Length: 441
Ligand SMILES: Cc1cc2nc3c(=O)[nH]c(=O)nc-3n(C[C@H](O)[C@H](O)[C@H](O)COP(=O)(O)OP(=O)(O)OC[C@H]3O[C@@H](n4cnc5c(N)ncnc54)[C@H](O)[C@@H]3O)c2cc1C
Image (tube, rainbow, N blue to C red; front, side, top):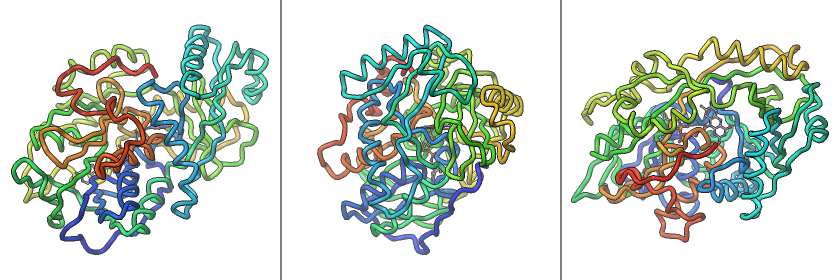
């Protein structure tokens, strides 16, 4: 587990009814609940384990526009603005700061790709600076290496993954919503094709509107309602080292290893894109859809083991609403880290940044990253079930856009002008198998 995850108090009583029930206490769920509660709706947020304990606390904390797919860039820009004001709004420090993100490379094709992205970003008003060899060496001086070039995105930043989701959940409580941990939503009750209630392990909440923000569990939940949502997860392993190292950039990406300064002053170390593909029944079911993505990323992906099969988040089972479900058997998806990847990460980090040799390893962990076939999240009302809004499939970059995604969910539900064009995110693109190309980054 990434330690220490900030814990929040659970509301004691499950409400009999709510305007909206949000299922899932990761960034997608807490921000949805927060922006809905701010608009005066009675919101109940249910989480099967602890707020933020799955992907939303296991990530690097990058909130970036840099290298975003064109479909996600507007949401990313809006999210950064929302991160800017969040601490003032909720009265809590989520560790967000626009420290800028630094990318360094000796690969000319990679540098050329960043330059192309810079040219595109300019057309939508996003500034990023290409670095020549001298500038890259200067910004990357803690590596003690020469670089052919790089890029620095000054308006991007990082937030603290172990604090963000729990503190936004506190914001939900302050806005009059309720938060229920250790409370799995087993399924929905429908009347004439419309949501009429959410059945949880602790009772039923009557409601006409539900947000399914269950991260890696979303597809199996949707399947209970006959909704086809192609989703697959990969297992990424990651680690943290102790505080006390100075001179290392706050957020640095290289093809060998990436480092991010943590809220406690230590550093998170990871190899970008590297992960294991653990076969699961769901992954086999949707394998045809995921072939283009896996082919594109094949250099970084390696075959995994039965860890994912056993954890049950991607099973094809149907379950009853009056008996414990797979979500109650697996309160927190906490897969075992890949030892080989962890050892490799530490070796590369210490070779790249000699100052890290003095730092001690404080924790290692893994996380399942849930993805859609095109690498763009699915956000929008499900055509076949009125009142059900899906917000999942954030494809490894959902932490930074959590605020924008939650805001969009609230816009859709309240009928307000959407914060960004919702069309690229609509889940119906998967029912018609007509989604666009796989996201570049
Ligand atoms: C190693 C790693 C590094 C990453 N780095 C970055 C990064 O730097 N920047 C970035 O933007 N993104 C990053 N990501 C991706 C990012 O963490 C995710 O996209 C994002 O956190 C997804 O949020 P979520 O709310 O959709 O899912 P989650 O955080 O997984 O939350 C889903 C929640 O729903 C709950 N749940 C599921 N089903 C039910 C149910 N039926 N009833 C009740 N509760 C339920 C689960 O318990 C879980 O807590 C990274 C991810 C990983 C694993």
